[in-house]
Image (cartoon, rainbow, N blue to C red; front, side, top):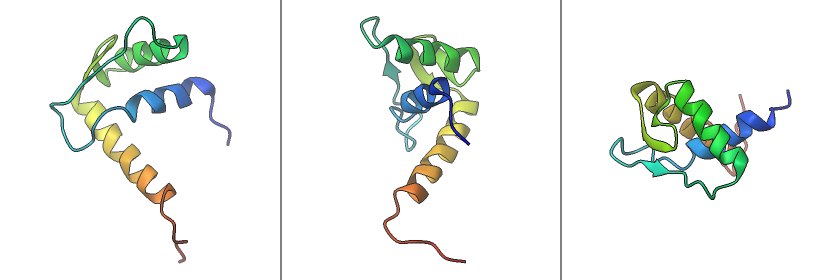
Length: 83
């Protein structure tokens, strides 16, 4: 299942947020890559962040970032998980 570039860009933006703190936000400047700017706008349109250029995670965004953090933890694990 290949992931579209738009989704990967959104994931990259979300990884800039600290999953441990709802009080830390981000700011995407107008000089950022166009894909990053567009991804940030889409995250805002999806009600995952508070501002079109970053801001803070909404409650929905906090839930998404917790799932993303869990996924990244599993994928970055050096030991193979067996069932």
